[in-house]
Amino acid sequence: MSSTRRNSTERMSRRGFLRSSALFAGGAAALPTIVPSSVFGAVAPSERITMGSIGVGNMGTTDLKGFRGTSDAQVVALCDVDANYLEKARQIAELDKGSCYGDFREVLARADIDAVVVATPDHWHIPISIAAVQAGKDVYCEKPLTLTIQEGRILADEVKRYRRVLQTGSQQRSESNFRHACELVRNGYIGEVKTVHVGLPGNNRKCEPTWEPQPVPEGFDYDFWLGPAPWEPYHTQRCHYQFRFLLEYSGGQTTNWGAHYLDIGQWGLGMDDSGPVELRGAGEFPKTGLFTTATKIEFEATYANGAKLLCKTGGGHTRFEGTEGWVDVKRGGLETEPASLKTHVIGPDEIRLYQSNDHRQNFLDCIKTRKDPIACAEVGHRSATLCHLGNISMLLKRPLKWDPAQERFIGDSVANRMRWRPRRAPWRL
Image 1 (cartoon, rainbow, N blue to C red):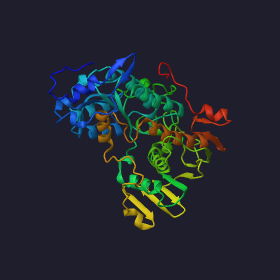
Image 2 (cartoon, rainbow, N blue to C red; image 1 turned 135 degrees about the vertical axis):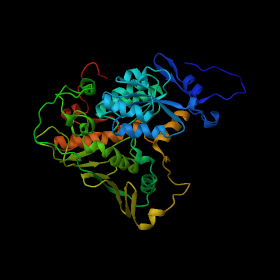
Image 3 (tube, rainbow, N blue to C red; image 1 turned 180 degrees about the vertical axis):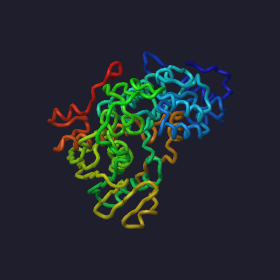
Image 4 (spheres, rainbow, N blue to C red; image 1 turned 90 degrees about the vertical axis):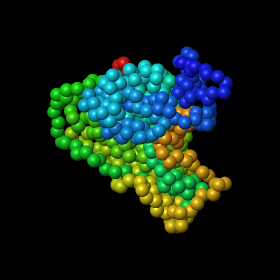
């Protein structure tokens, strides 16, 4: 792709830059490292970052409205396997039916699209995101970024290879109270961190004790919804929001809310490129019904520096406890001991963490500058890995040793097989 060169005195348009910067040769993209935003000037409607939304129900609708509310982006394509969701989103986006698709590959084939939002069920996150970066698109992928540990490594490597921008939808990193909490911890204001307590909300859907197959609703491409997952008979509790309570498609609240509060634990401990070295789990799982994810979460992760992270069902927060105090942070709240830490100003010469005050805008800004966003692919992968490690430890109910550098369990072939899931053809990675 190339842009029309006007003359040496004219400023290159954002649309022209985004197109001309994706120089594909042999499937790889070559991009400049940083381009100052001053290159672009005012944002005319025709010069906005063009986006496609893949998966437009639930959080997909929220993301659609969020990106439409920015001045830097315009959503020009929608995709969903549920025709009812797709029509509702079409009306929100004010698009014609020709801009709506049932197959994400049609969206990725459009040369006029710069970036996509992936807000599908978890089992589709990696196949779609990898296809998107290989097609030269930047990606905003909802959390948890991955379904398995190994597929997360594949995606993180592909993002780096194709020099794409990927933002994970763990938006608490773009909230000032979480950043302040982690800066206090990283700068030693509570002394040496000994324990991190993470509380996760309990299941918000009831698991019925029995179930029978149901007819697939009209307008719902159920086979495509299953995609890489094993074939199973349709039931309403298997799809849409409830998918997160079946291990075939998600990891329950461990990955759902863990991708928020365990992510903050990783951030505060400075483990964005690493993880724990030992795990021990004792969760509870359904004995009847359709759901298979933990109904009671309880696991312990130990890091190489001796810090322990204890994750249990109950509330929603991350609490760092050190030798000289503690910091407890949740959405809309921050408590500290000593209390003065709550309003303490971090100095310019101290550790300052990545500052983003708007998660979606941070993604758009990074599309323009080609910098990594606050929750880049490596961060999203490592935080999701901690969630998956917790689930694996609860399922096996025995101590596990983990090598965060090699991303393998030590001396445990059974646990290592759980880093991956078989995939239905043709959706193998």
